[in-house]
Amino acid sequence: MKQQDIKKIVKESYSEIAKKSNRNSGEVCGCCSCSSSMQEKIAKSIGYSDEELKIVPEANLGLGCGNPTAFSKIKLGDVVVDFGSGAGLDCFIASKKVGEKGKVIGIDMTEEMIKKAKQNAKKYNFSNVEFRLGDIESLPVESNSSDVIISNCVINLAPDKDKVFREAYRILKKGGKMYVSDIVLLGDLTKEQKNNNELLSGCVSGALQKEDYINKIKKVGFRVSIMSEDKDISKRQYKGIALESIKIEAIK
Image (cartoon, rainbow, N blue to C red; front, side, top):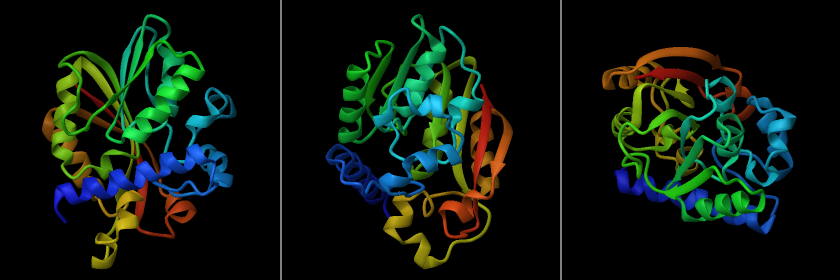
């Protein structure tokens, strides 16, 4: 499948998720798919606390495969960039950690998600959070400008992951850190699974084998540490497909 076709499928899928959430249709589905009645349950199962989910309830769309803000080492005054910020959940949590002197920048390629995130930020008066429309393979962020990158179940959706990791390295300051929660494969997918559009937008078809994923990050120049691995997510949310949610710290 061509890269532009992959991006089109992913963008259309997440645009629809944002639209459905605005209509309160009760049928929001996406990466780590769920219905609206299960959004809170899914979020708690991957590491979000009740307190975090109450910060901006509308920002939780039941997406993701972990909580990168929970294991990241974000400090007061940091500049944080979120790859694939969606409705802004992780950005709003991170904003509490960076404080008034810090800044959080959310990047998403879906216009509808950016619109929803900006509405949430305005409604809850987040002055230290900014959302930018952009592609994580070509970030609208200055070089050597960021202290921390967070990303939650998004990089697996990018067709060219080498570009993503090079961009991450570019925008981080020396000693900057990237905290990623993402889906990686532990076995081979069938041909049908690889060409399934729902599995593509659902974070499976575009995922890499675990070692390939880690090696791509190292190749760019990062020092990589695996912080935790969630294999049970396969049974909880992916019908037993051979995969896991991996939590990574990468230091420039």
